[in-house]
Image 1 (cartoon, helix red, strand yellow):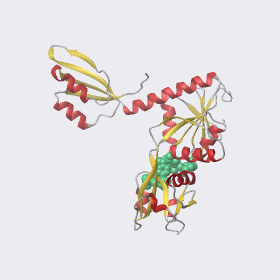
Image 2 (spheres, rainbow, N blue to C red):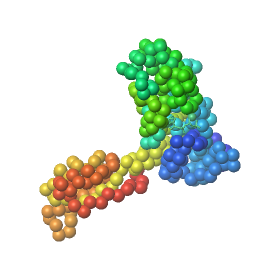
Image 3 (spheres, protein in one colour):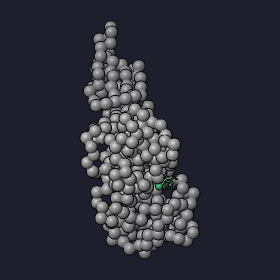
Image 4 (cartoon, rainbow, N blue to C red):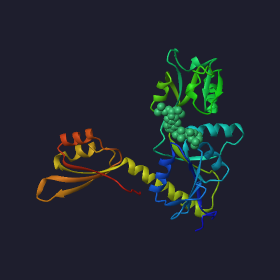
Length: 301
Ligand code: PRT
Ligand code: ZN
């Protein structure tokens, strides 16, 4: 199939930033092999009818809305900001969020100078708020019935109070290290964000739609696998119910007899949650022995 074929899926991914490696790794784990175009803007899928467009994350919602791309991977923070911006311009269905992914976790929070008292969002009244998310902050203020001025910053929001440009900021936080380094204190969170897969709300040709569904199923499989472990152990028959109860997120484990041991069985189970040391210790207490925890490579239901 030629790369120019209109039946090929185009997926927009951040070109260079925090989401790039995770996004490309997700597509690779879905089985996509690709080669980079000479302009470094498009990766052509070699084994699947899927091409990857490498762009700034802020452009991804618009590319999906304008049908340049069928799918996109972008943070919920950017999606919400763009959704409000498009809605303000009269476009209420620019894209559909079809999956929440398991990377890019962060939160959009208000932060104030260390020495500023804070009772709650009502303290924002009459203040100047620096942010890169003017629509989200504006919507929050409207809902709270608060009047405040929003000062738009495209980056380095955390230095706005120091520059005397704002009293308070509203910015993304992950570890909180940047806020602390700038003598700011995190207060109320207004959005919890994670990377998401978006899709055009428009109808696409049947061949393309089928591949889009297949890709989404594979993404589900990849996410499940990263959270899953295969566990094998020996257990006294008498403790079977208790041990099954302790296995995290497992359904119907396989129970097998052990040669020459009437009192013991082998249990194999897929646990859809991480298996921590504490769980193994509890299982041991309940009588389990010879425990092995293995990674799961692929999963399809
Ligand atoms: O060039 P392009 O526009 O594509 O990239 P960008 O600079 O706009 O985005 P980038 O790569 O910084 O982030 C992409 C996405 O990653 C964001 O839209 C979020 O969805 C997600 N993400 C997750 C984060 C963070 N964590 C994060 N900590 N984005 C930004 N930050 C910044 C934050 O703005 C602040 O400056 O990191 C700093 C705070 O981090 P901590 O750990 O010190 O709290
Ligand atoms: Zn950006």
